[in-house]
Image 1 (cartoon, rainbow, N blue to C red):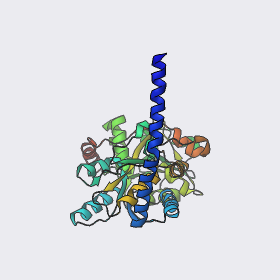
Image 2 (image 1 turned 90 degrees about the vertical axis):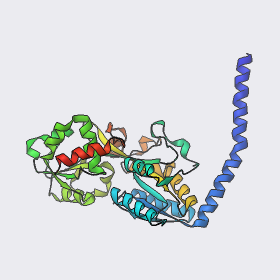
Image 3 (image 1 turned 90 degrees about the horizontal axis):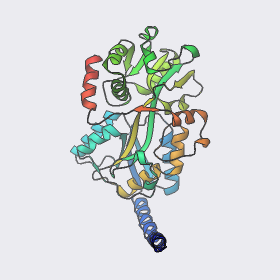
Image 4 (image 1 turned 45 degrees about the vertical axis):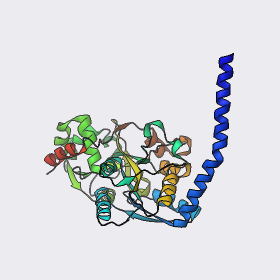
Length: 337
């Protein structure tokens, strides 16, 4: 009985502490919001090209806080080089980098970022997508196969990554460049880890490489190629009305975690923290989930359409490892010459 009373007393004390701390926390966040509004703007370097979701979230943020967001959308390596050049010149080009986790980990090792501090929504992150205090997981993009439905009959669609090795697809598969960080690098790394070099040696004879990611999807829709890999599943809704579909292979989706990080010596640190927090709040997470992203917070699946639900429940095949990526991409350069 004494033990039960002690437990109850501990719970009551903890609740009391929570209540007593709440006003201080609210006051601290209100101070941050006021400081962010005074800064009035925030600059975001993002690799999410050609997708409406982050634009929709930014519009909600600007409407709520009256803080202008300057968005600069570039490729993965372009953002890395832009940040390096900005900092070498002593310029505060951006406040936030929004890039893949592997590239961001490499940049963190170079000292490009600073810890972002406390966020209101941080506690909502799932246990499998926690933040280290510098890199904040915001969205997870899974990859499948884009199929032109006019050129490929349902019974002919590839059902697995291994199906891409069928001789009938030789020279008919458009592929992102698998020798560099980004979509193609994710596919190479995960398929190399899952299936070995033999798979990639054979796949190299099947595909045509291209670095024009968004144009690759349009080329497939126009019928220049029946298949495109790896296809970012959130890119299907913007292609609505075109003769294409996204196929999730049986082995699962390679994926990339997109993370936000505050740049070292950011000119607008308060607005940066506020925007980072906003991107993991419920409304923003739902925008991403409805668009075909996985998100690092729990969202109600019954509010998603069938396509978004299929992505949310699909098996994840794997992602890149910052400690191994350079060695693996060196092999990609041997294979794809």
